[in-house]
Image 1 (tube, helix red, strand yellow):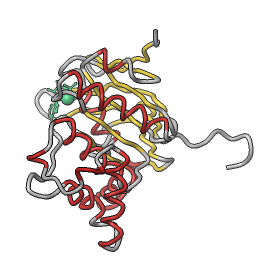
Image 2 (tube, rainbow, N blue to C red):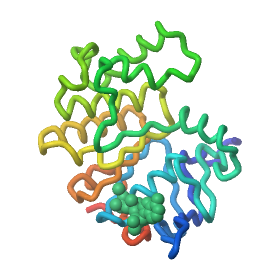
Image 3 (tube, rainbow, N blue to C red):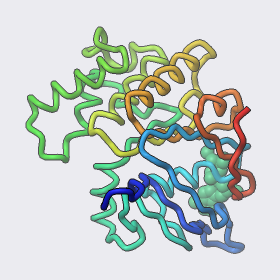
Image 4 (cartoon, protein in one colour):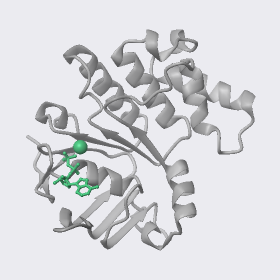
Length: 232
Ligand code: ADP
Ligand code: MG
């Protein structure tokens, strides 16, 4: 990159679209253009069935656009073989889901350390990185707790630590507060804000417009059509 060039966006979608095959096919994401830059906090809001998870699956390399182009950190993901895509997903993407998806009978630190299992990091270092990530999400006192003994809010913190421990380029959250009470939901949103201020690039998918207001930037999605929303 020469002086004066804009930095490469983390995400660049150019007329990217996704149609699920079938009879009839489902056009879940219509062609959209979108750039997400390092340090952005983007919320994507829309009703159920709007195409939010489809969009997240595309960003997270779980689905490949059936039309258009997706560049992740400048890499055209449509050009990759399956194995390469899996490797890049593991290195560059952290996922957080509504229902946490933790291993119930492994302590918090192990749930987090397991995310590093395939990265060739020695086990002692995996453990210390897991501890660090759990400290960052406010769970230094719960390293050895089993998920079954943790509250919903704490479980989601473990899931966030797991998503971040490998220092991904992009943190993707699909309805991260959808299974939490108002107070825990608020605390998780504050944590995401804080992580974003420390430099993590985050996309939060939600059907809840009060959650959407946490974004520095919001897009709406309805019937597969994405539109930029003006922040009030
Ligand atoms: P949201 O997350 O906003 O609720 P989705 O992205 O899950 O919406 O779904 C968008 C549309 O795509 C819906 O009409 C849904 O029924 C359809 N859809 C989702 N996944 C598939 C699939 N694997 N095959 C066919 N249609 C799908
Ligand atoms: Mg969904």
